[in-house]
Image (cartoon, rainbow, N blue to C red; front, side):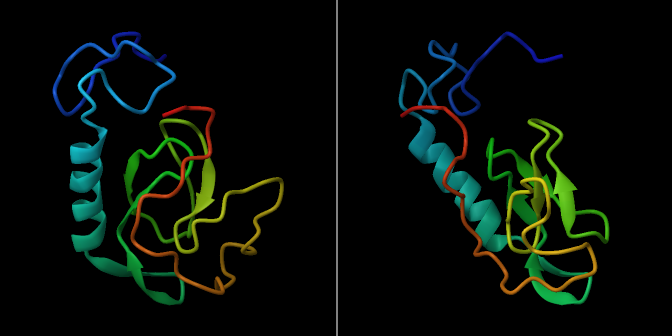
Length: 122
């Protein structure tokens, strides 16, 4: 079950518009900088046969930070249930665009906050 008490993680104020990524005090930009710092400074690891993969990623759908703990490159966000590849950040749409769990991705996605793939508005 989802909590109905919406608030800004940055300033702790009540969130007025649940369809917006920006709080009433417009804290998103400071929070985004913090998230980028986490993503840019996290350790790298080997996933499958691919070395140098960041150990922390943002879910490409809801932007939840996820720490990779298991060997498989395919993960499911516990927040929004999005299936994506931790190496190349491809979202599962029926089949995996990057192949099976043992296949090597053609690239390692950069350490950044992905463009959001949900109906939220600025």
